[in-house]
Length: 346
Image 1 (cartoon, rainbow, N blue to C red):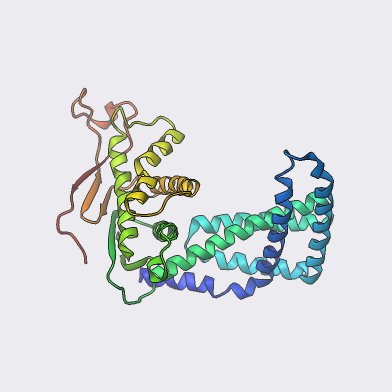
Image 2 (tube, rainbow, N blue to C red):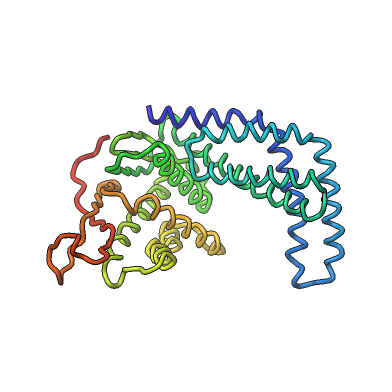
C-alpha cells in the first residue's frame, strides 16, 4: 500500500509535465541566456575594460527576453505556473518541492516586475530567477524519477542488499525523505563509480510502514558503501558524547560528522577512481553529513543490516546512575550498537 501510494503520486507528477510545458520551455530559454550573462560578469574583477561590452550584452539579452515573451504570451506562462504549482503540491518529497515552490514564487514576481518596466536590472533578476527555478525543477524531476524507478516491481538480479529499519511511526513525508536520500546518494555514488545500465539504479525490494522497514538492492559495491556510511554515522554518534567527540556548535558538529564519514577514503578503498574529484566528493560529503543528522539523529532505535543502534539515556560516571532531571544540560541522545538477533522480516 505504501509503495503504491508513492508510485502513484510520483507517476502522476511525472505524467503531467505537458500541462506546464510553456513555463519550463520559457524558463530553459531564459536560463541559457543567464549563463551567457554570468560568464562575462564573473571576469570583471580581472578586466574592468569589459564593463562596456557587458552592458551591451545585458541590453541585447533584454531585447531577446522581450522577443521570447512575444513568442510565449505572459498569460500562458502564468497559467502554466498554476499547473506546476498544482502538480508539485501532490509530490510526497517535501524538501525539493519546497525549493521549487519558493523559486516559482520568486520567478513570478520577477516576471511581473520585468513586464512593468523592461530595464536591465529587472531583466537580470528575471534571468536569475529562471535559472534558479530551472535547476531546482530539474533536481525535483531527477529525484522523482530515481525514487519512482526504485519502487518499480521488476525482477531483481543478484546484487548487494541493505536493510534499514526504524522503530518510529514515520509520516509519509518522513518516509519520502528517507527514500529520496538513499535513491539520490546511490545515484551520485554510481556516477562517481561510472557504473552503467541497471547498476546505476537503486531498487527497493520491500518497504513496510508502522515501524518502518526498507530493504534496498543494487550494485554490491555501492550498496556496501551506503551501509558503511550509515554505520560510520552511528559510530560518530556514540563517540560524540565523550570529551573527545563532543561538539559545541553546529559547524563543529557538521565538520565532525564529515571527518567520521571519510568519504574520499571509503571511495578509494572501494576501488573508485577519486583523482580530480576532490571538490565533488567534499560537496557530497557535506550533503550526506547534513542528511544523516537530519534523518537519524533523533531516532530511538535503528537497524542497519544485522546491527542495531539504540538510543539510551546517558550515564555520567562521576554522578552514577541518576535521574535525568538532576543532570545539567544532558546530551539529547546516545546510540549504542547491539546484536541485531534474528529479527529479519524477510
